[in-house]
Figure 1: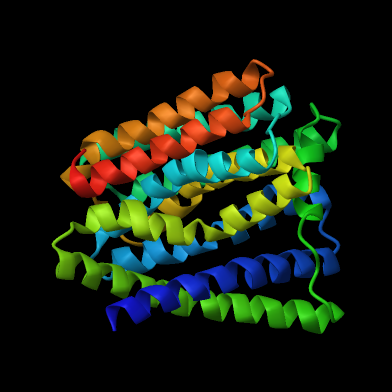
Figure 2 (figure 1 turned 90 degrees about the vertical axis):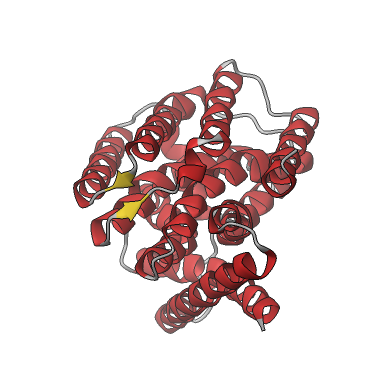
Length: 317
């Protein structure tokens, strides 16, 4: 039964990752939303929707370790697992201007999360503050890029172009959106239940389950979109998706969850995990700012580091 819930939850979240993103982007296009705004908000929100619903569901079910572990673990997986896997398909260069702006925002979120973890709890006013900072960042970025900006607009517009609209026009977009929402809610419920019962059955902490199984499960949309983008040679989009997802995980997912219900911090997260996330974020940006490309060798090292981290979580290596 536990295995069934886990597998069903993961499958539903993957279905959500396809249907919800296509339905949301298709609806936005029908409403004449600009490609820039779609890339900045709709794509990022839709691909991060599994993290949002799972973290919120876990917090409301009094499983705060899964909620926090999902955010920290997803940010680690986005860099080490997803970028590592994408770079095996194609080397990943990036526009320096995008990395300076969005990468700096990602770093700000990482340091803020570090402080929140050591504060012992994330209160409602923390959540509101995170959401306000994200809203200001989106507005400033949109206005700057609409006036010409620094080239980052092309990446965000490409993110929107990567997502095909569902067939069937308005009806097709509506059906895809509804299927995505239903799969999201059902998948989140099954995944949280399955993860909780797995932790009990195998004597593993909910924090570890949140950092690994739940985090990877909710990152499936990013994995799919980055893999497809790398395969098509749209490497800017792959890296932009990861940086954007890490921004939304901290400011939107954690912000919305804490605004709904204050989240206590498990002491497990003050150990290695938050530092792995921070170091991965810090090391990624100098590599991109230097103009270098994330090669297959470096991607292999990312994947090796992620495997080592997961091994340490479960076996104390």
